[in-house]
Image (tube, rainbow, N blue to C red; front, side, top):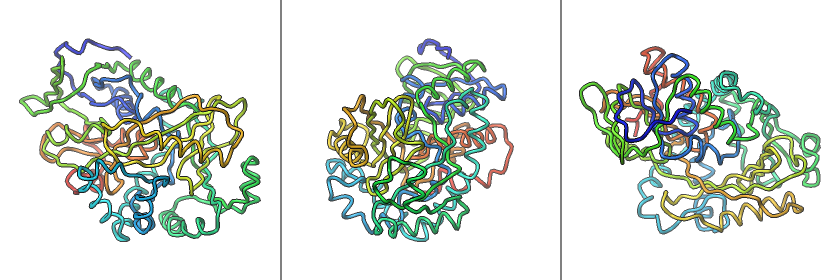
Length: 419
């Protein structure tokens, strides 16, 4: 990707703030339509949560994080230091407004509305991914083996009945498996006699970093430019939107905010008060001579995914609420390490560890669409656990808004003024 000096003043048709997977997919889409596009990010494209995720394109994941089951278990989840859902108590005051909204969104009626909205978007995610993969030359990095949830106790399986029913109602393709069927799909799991829930249509990427690099290269081939800078200021002016920061002064006819967990401050400057906060996600990687699994597998009681990647097993997941500033929490990594060794006790030492930041909204829906208060600003952030999954369809929706085409009513569920 072509990088230009951050200090160079520039007027551009479209500036995208954030070069994660959503920003990259949007740049690729708009570049393919012949638009003049500038990507602005202080870091290497795709180097944050877009790199560190579980690698799943989870078209089945319509159940919002906040739901009645989580609400019932919330006290235990928050006060158990080893639960997959944790809170940094030092951040409680800051998080309190978000948590109150999260509790309200976990009630049955809100959960159903949120699941319905997500399911509509997710239904388009796989075709959009296949189209983007072909355009960007990443089809060889996709694996089409589905995704498997395993339930190692009857109580866990029973507790998930509401989620299965909701997905079935919304048309998600899922198959309940016996322990024998789980073992047939994943022979290394045979000893657990675990029931399973299989999502046969799901795909995953075997190397997220390489995928991001290829997306960036494909966008560059279409003329997209990158400026390595941090955007700290946004204001409307005649002819467009001024974006500013240390050494940066850019006026764009249209500005797309796709800065993930760092988007709230810019949205606020656009006049949109969006309750975005951060889920801190972790992963460990273990080198493997041969794949231990055939597909991503989630032991539901442990709250993480085990994804086979090139030469390694990535163990990614859990939720830690605690903002952007706190350092890595070693206890979260220990939890992942101890959990995966319940499945694969022979694993050696991890070869890498990672902390990243998911942009999370209380209703689990992203914000996609125009600012209600600043013309020329479009929001594309807040995807939570679904950034990788929803990036290509988000890019299509953003491109439609800019071109003035498509059914804008479909974006009502993701509008910035819904809060």
